[in-house]
Image 1 (cartoon, rainbow, N blue to C red):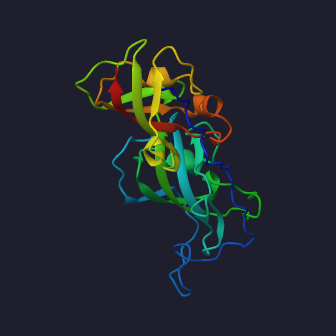
Image 2 (image 1 turned 135 degrees about the vertical axis):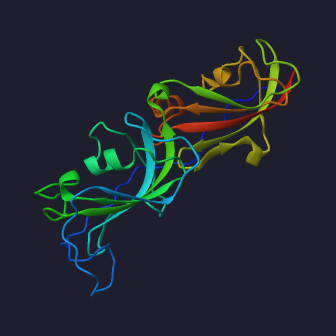
Image 3 (image 1 turned 120 degrees about the vertical axis):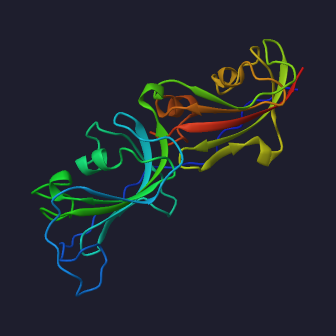
Length: 260
């Protein structure tokens, strides 16, 4: 029996929220009640870790995927991609794609971590402001690091062995049966043969699949083995089609059911 890879069914588009149009007011933190102690503008970037992550640490040059909410000093929310089906924001740290407060303030976070950033206006949108953000406005962000692709891995498929099997080895001409779960860096599921109860069955190295790199992902696995393969964002959209939002990496959790 032979089958082709199931097409992904989740369509997603990166949406950035619009900006508000309120000026900042005196307070120590966004959303504090009136009467709180007055503090002048920030004189440096402040980072407050709310949750320490346990995954890969972000460094300058790495690609990161984030959820975030941004507020002004008076608590006015001007931007967020947290909830409502919005996709993570994915960018390369230290390349000027985002404000300097982010390029500096996200370094050192680990996947799964949550951090509060207090960004002085010179590291935000400066003297002029932007898109409804007032001039010289300090900015306050709650950010969550969802995924990190190390700079050296940004253009190559990476493989991590989760469990080494003990059965026959996947090789050219072998008929293999494999289950997989594919997810975006945000954790959103794209496809699952476990859910459909229809594992992928094909002849390794002979059958041509929709995902041409599938042979690379499972090559050398043994029956009973479990492997995690990551397709970097530089490959994912072109390899997996337009239903994968640009800038997103895709992880496959592969379980080798049979090799014969």
